[in-house]
Image (cartoon, rainbow, N blue to C red; front, side):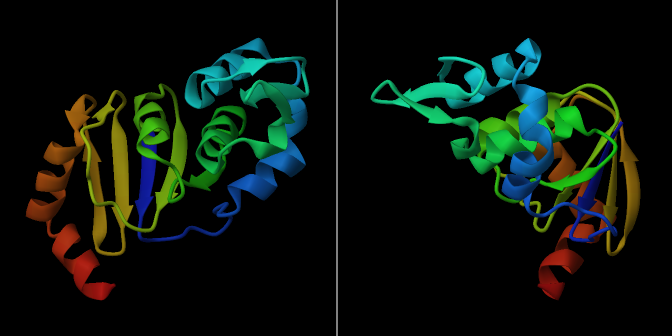
Length: 160
């Protein structure tokens, strides 16, 4: 089940995904082919060797130069017990985050529901105004409708 902390930070929430990746996740990627495949798909890169990827004009760059969104996705995959902010993720990464299977938690300061991502997992949303469970395969527009009906969206926007 995905737990989404929308506008409410739980203690231990990781906001600095770049730093966390560079400090703790980087070494786990070096020899994990599954993580390399995820990075290749998100960034559109090929690995030149375990430490370097080819991205800009076929020049090798190291893994610390991945996008913050890609680092966030890999952090979630490697450390599913931690809560990571997805505020800096682009739509390409958000689509993948919401399609992950398994148990993990994410934080987002604002959850505007733009785009149409399929959430392929049951999920639990926690806002400053309450909590609600949703069944899988509900797209974000349906989620936003449900949250608005539930009363959280208007109150959340009013508090910002």
